[in-house]
Image (cartoon, one colour):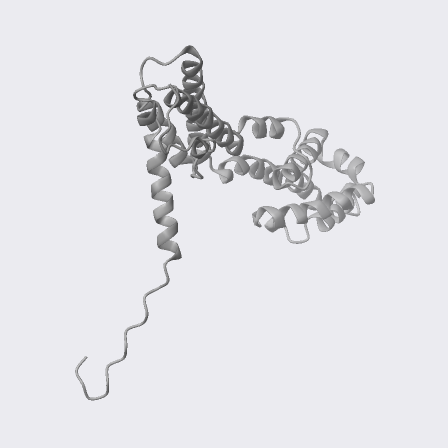
Amino acid sequence: MLRTDDFDPSAYMTAPRLDVPSLIALGRQLLAAAPADLPSSAESCKKSLREELRALEEGYKATQSEDPAQRKRPIDQRSDNAWACVKARLEPYTWLDEGEFPEAARASALRRKLFPTGLSFTQLEYGAQWAEASWRMQLIAEEKLEPELRRLCGELFVDELLRWHKEYSAMVGVVPARGASRTEAVARPNLADLRRQAAQAIVSWQAQLVAQHLAGHPSARLGLRPTDEYREKLTAATARAAEPPPPPASPSEPGLPA
């Protein structure tokens, strides 16, 4: 039987604008208030809502426990170590007599070019460290120093330097992430998408309850009450924010007690 009360179905064709924790709470409250004896189409929507809420909860938990600094620190440490290894491999040559050992002169020149301030640049903020490391890598490329570095320092250490500079560049966002960095990015949940999917599942569930209420289901309207309560809270909060501030208290007249 079609109902003719003042019920407005359009009010439930959107989800209230809520932050993620509140949206999760609303979804859980809607599930708890779900009426019994619903048709299979409504039960399917309820199941979808439960699944989307679970995904949103897991994604929210992951993003809250995720510390960007913890993801960056291993790459920063490996890059620092690679630069330190190259410097350490050059230094013993500089202890030798340059007149007797030509490698000593070349190692000294390379150390002055690449480490004019030692390794202090590896202790800078991530972006600044990348800029400092980047001009060194450009110098290696422009002056074709890589073969000499490989001869003096060893293939392994130069390979590590090149590898971790690429990873560092991806970490600070100056080049697209590749390999392990991309895998990590994919593994991190997209909270905006999860929130949107959960909101859509809430609307689908509300639409089912609207249809059941209009068809005369005795408790479908009560199943929408959590949404009504959230809308009432939002309306009250908006009204309070729009209220003008109270006028300042009048100053006391001179000579009179306040």
